[in-house]
Amino acid sequence: MREPVNDVSQTPPPPPPQALLERLKDYGQEDAFALWDELSSDERQLLVKDIESLDLSRIDRIIRCSLRSHGLPTAAIEPVPESSVSSVEQRSLEDRERWWKMGLKAIHDGKLGVLLLSGGQGTRLGSSDPKGCFNIGLPSGKSLFQLQAERILCVQRLAAQSTNDGSTTPPQIHWYIMTSPFTDEATRRFFESHKYFGLEADQVTFFQQGTIPCVSGDGRYIMESPYRVAKAPDGNGGVYSALKSSRLLEDMATRGIKYVDCYGVDNALVRVADPTFLGYFIDKGVASAAKVVRKAYPQEKVGVFVRRGKGGPLTVVEYSEMDPSLTSAINQQTGRLRFCWSNVCLHMFTLDFLNQVANGLEKDSIYHLAEKKIPSIHGQTVGLKLEQFIFDAFPYAPSTALYEVLREEEFAPVKNANGSNFDTPDSARLLVLRLHTRWVVAAGGFLTHSVPLYATGVEVSPLCSYAGENLEAICRGRTFHAPCEITF
Image 1 (tube, rainbow, N blue to C red):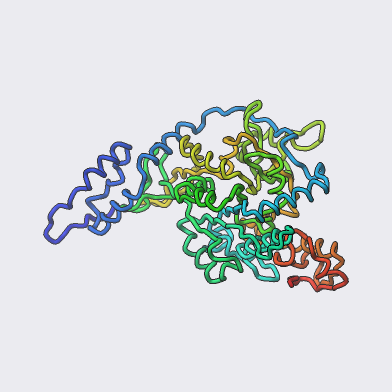
Image 2 (cartoon, rainbow, N blue to C red):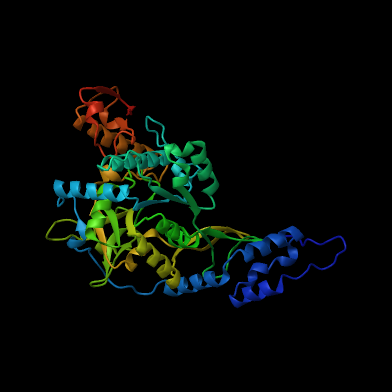
C-alpha cells in the first residue's frame, strides 16, 4: 500500500471530478478512483486524463457483450464444401494465366490496396522492435518490411509492363500499415531511415490499432498503476474499427480502391498484392477470400476454416477450440483430414465488405476473451484481455472463397526465436532459400555450395522476380555459389 501523499498544509485532497466519477459509477468502474487520496497532484491529473481518454459507453458494451457470449453454445461445425475451395491440383495453367492477367489489369487500374497487420513486437524473437524490422538472416540482410516493399515494387512494374497503352509510369499500390501504440513510432522511423525501401513516401499510410482495458473476471478494470488503467491492443481484428475511426475506408474509396489484400507481417514468403489471387477473387465475384494451406498433421496448432451450421457461413475455429475427435477426423472418400484448410492470415476483401464488417463488428461488440497474467498494482494479476481477430470478418460475408497454396511457396512464418522447434527465423530463411534455388535451377542456372544444399541456397531479390518469372536472362548458363543474393 502506498503512503498517502499530503501537502505541507495537510489540507485534504480535492475529490475526483464529480461528473467523471458519476460516469464511472454508471458502468460499475468507480474503483478506478479507489486510491485517489494517495496520489500526488500530478498523478491525479494523469489518472483523470487516462479515464477521460476511454470511450466508457463503448467499452462497457464490449465487456458486457463479450462476457455474456462467452461459453454460450455455438452451432455445430461442418467441413468446408469442396466447391468453396480452389485446390492446387484442380487449377489449370490456363486458369492461372488468366487470373494473373486479370489481377495485373486491376492493379494497373489502381483498384488494389494492400493492408499490413503489423502491431506486434518481436518479443518471442528476442527483440523489442516491430516484427517487420526483423532480419531473418538472408544473404541480403533484408528485413521483412524490405522484402514486402520490394515485392510491391515488382508487382507495380509487372502491372505497367502488362498493358499496351504505352504507359511507362508504374501504377502505385497504396500500402496501409497498421501499427500499435508499442510499434508505431519505431515503424515510422524505420521506414523513414530506409527511404521507404524505394516506394514513394505518400503511398504508405500508417495507422494505429486501438487498445482496450484489461478486466477481471467480473468485468472490472484492472489498474496497471494507481493512476493508469491496464490496457492491451485489441487484436489484429481491431483493424476494422481502426480503419473506420481513422477514416481510411473513405480514403480507399477516394483513391478508387475496390479490393484490399490483407496479410500479417511475420511471413517471409508472403506474396504481397498477388495478381493471381486477385484475379481469382475478381473472377469468383465473392466478398471475401483467403489463401489456405493443408494442415501438415492433425495436431498442428493452426486455426482451420469450417462451415458454422448447416448451410452457414465459413469461419475459422482456433486449434484450441476444436474437439480432438474432429481434429483427427478423416474424410473416407479422400483419405485426408475432414478439417484440413489452415488459416494463414492471407486474405482478400472488397472495400464494400470491409465497410460492412466494420459496422457489423462494432454493432455486435463481441470480443474473444483471453485469460492472461496482467501487470497490476497487485503484481501479476490473472485477468482477461479482450481481442478481435482478423478472421472474425468471415461470418459476415455473403460469400467466401478459399484458394489453396503450397506452404513451401507462400508460408514461412517467423514467430519463435531460433532454437525453438518451429516457425523460427532459421526455418523461414531456409524456406526462402530452397524456393529461390528451385527458381534459379528452373531458369537454367547452376549452384555450387560448400555446405550441404539442404542447409543453404540462393536468394532472388524481389526486384528481379516476384514468383520465379523473368529469370532466364539472369540465370541461364550461370553458376552461383550458395549462399548469395541474385539481383540485377
